Image (cartoon, rainbow, N blue to C red):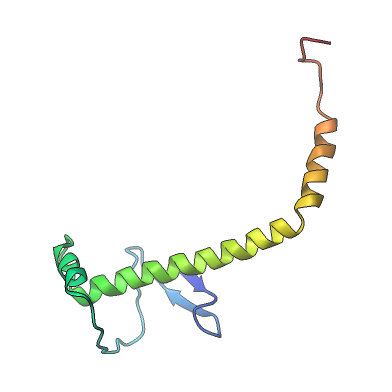
Length: 106
């Protein structure tokens, strides 16, 4: 399955993700981050057998994926909002064609 993160960097990047949700491919890069002690304690209490690095990577991937989806949904919302009056007029027009034979008053 391929997940497309369009806006994470200037060019679109396609990541290959296995059925278990983990990325298969590129080489890992060692980095150093500074976390608050309480955040680190909470990370260490998370159930599972994965390492701290794997857990942080999984959390960041989920965050980046959610952010990319939010951006796509924002673009979609902007397109819908732009043409909302047209869509609403069309919906009202379609409603005019609905039958009234079930109305008890007529």
